[in-house]
Amino acid sequence: MVRALSVFAAFWLPLLSAASVAAAPEDATQADPPQADSATYIPPPTRDYILWYRNFDSPTIHTLVTLALNETPEYGPYRLVRSEDLSQGRALRELANPNTRMVDIANVATSREREDYLTAIPIPVDGGLLGLRVCLTTPDKLPMFEGIKTLDDVKQRNIRIGQGSHWPDTPILQAAGLSVITHARYEILFGMLKADRFDCFARGASEVLYDLELQNDPELVIVPDLVLAYPMPSYLFVNRERPELAQRLQLGLERAIQDGSFGGYLVTFFSKPVHALKLPQRQVIRLPNPDLTEESALIGRQTFQNLQRRLNFLVRR
Image 1 (spheres, rainbow, N blue to C red):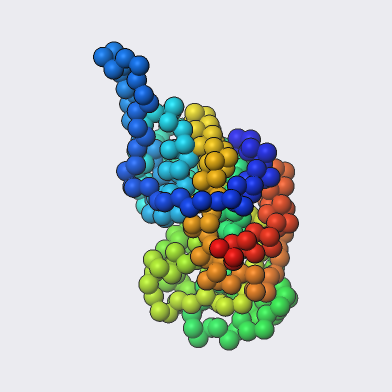
Image 2 (cartoon, one colour):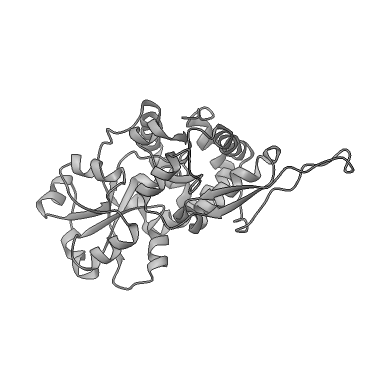
């Protein structure tokens, strides 16, 4: 794992004076550095960085990666490329393989195993909101969620939760004694929900509105007053044999933290879900996450300790 800039303290400082950052174009590239002698200067080649397709298609993560790369012009010009449509498990296997170039960068939730075989840039890309899970369900199932206050309530109502088979959420929910139904493909899970294979598709607060926009399906609704919460930082990951890429992303995010543009990114992309989901008013059921490294567990604990302050700040935006 690449070491973070003062890990978490530096992560939140610029949020208090954040300025908005606009999404960069899909094919944004770095300008060549200024040249002292243009007659003899040979510009560096443009580097292609292959971003996992779900991250590439997400305006939020595409903007973040572009921000980090734009903050590091000394590494040369670049072009972001969309990967093939790979499941999360397949994408991470390809990312770990030094002999292929199917994926160079992926943003996923962290786990001890993932940090063992990949290089993580340990700055939570969404301020920790991925660990706040709201239930996507169908209108006819809303009554079964009414009045839930505790984890025992969820168990007693036999609420089945849908998750990706390779997602770190799955063992967290299973360890809490919940019934979890899985599939390898994110897209298939929406159909499984509508087919009554499970009752709650638990999605991160930072991603569920994008899910609904993408699906554009009136049969999908959000349970209005419940959130399952556990520490689960979401990082950028790269292959362990690509230290220059890890260093570029790390440096770019640290510079964005220092100049305030990272705080602006958080406000731009995450104040809307905080408002729309009314997160501070929801009933919170907290679950432990035993599958974190010491550093990520520290980041996760600090995320929860700062939860109310963060939500209150974003609600005022």
